Image (cartoon, rainbow, N blue to C red; front, side):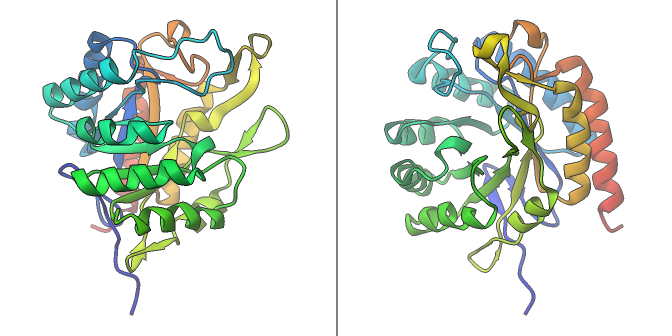
Length: 288
């Protein structure tokens, strides 16, 4: 028998084959409740008429920074409260990343999708805690593929989550190291990620359009991460054409003033064109 479609359930959204392309978007770090609401309101308004389900994204703590002096965000208590309020106000699911196993349970009580950062995708304690919390609170877990491992090795995180009883799983591609200071996007690898099996069907796959343009250690003398945000829309179009089930996009009204990932976030004013393009590509690929 052919593989049956495998879906990831995030609140009332379904991510996977035969479902609309999902947009996971927002600022890198949650700078304030007001900015989060403003960005989320705009993105929801852009996604709705295009038939693109929307998940608000922001981080309460950016633990993986180039410099110890870099801003990290409002912290877990304040940040999770803001995220939950934003989700209720906008009527959309929300997601954030966690970096320590003790953050899994509090996050699961406030957000719909728990994200595991790429550098931590093999951390067993973190995956187990996230899987157990997600299973207990009917949440989902999104694991970003490490820049240092192959698509095939992502079977490991899937198995670890499955052993905790977590059934809502998604994987995200965000580029692979190519020497120092550069990432490449292997679309053969994206296809291989979409072949991973869990509970009798392929695991849904997301593509991170903005982090994939990072140039680690190349910004301001190595104090921040550099990047090519201008190339993110091209990657969004390519990933959509490759058949991914969701896109992860960080955006900001004024990226240059953002507290994190200033070099890779897309300007909020440029998002209408990006979303129109990917919606048109997805529509062209969908049987009518």
